[in-house]
Image (cartoon, rainbow, N blue to C red; front, side):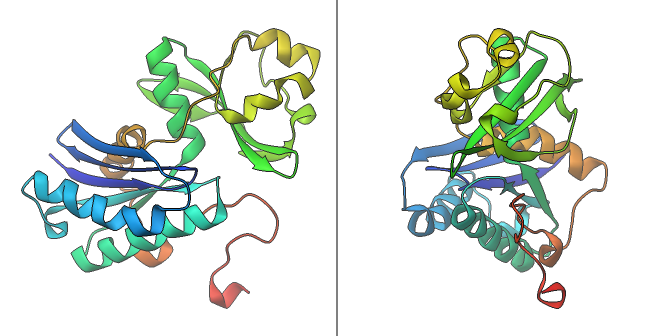
Length: 227
């Protein structure tokens, strides 16, 4: 029996979702450049509608990346603040894993490659197999040119995310394996909640100060003592 609040601002979308013993409610909006003004009020409103306060939560999950550096920092900071105030752990969740889980379940596919636009003619991507209702990464999350995306196993694969706007730049093998990819897919806080609930149940929660963003690119986040 758990209550988990999830936050995500890693792309143009801003979303907050609440898990109460498996039941999920969400506020999802596509609001470019308005995350910092909207995220905390959205979270407070969702909790209020459920008759809860931050102190009633068992954990706070957040989209830890990859994605927009600024967006990831916003969700991380607010998640850390809420968790610290409530004295509960944080659960950093991969944005790519959340996309793979949501669309893999929706499309009835168990092999999914999720990809986000990383700008500078590159993509963030990872390949997953869905097992027992959760995404299992088949390789490390990567950032590279679209032409360098390689299939970890033979076709077919479900391709999801705006990174596949670069499908024409990918190898013929990838283009043959991924037909009609789903492009208009954002990471959603609601899709992070099943992963977060599993992580919490298995003791993978972190202290707020240890729940950090993941940028993938060189020169990403470091703790002060590591800089």
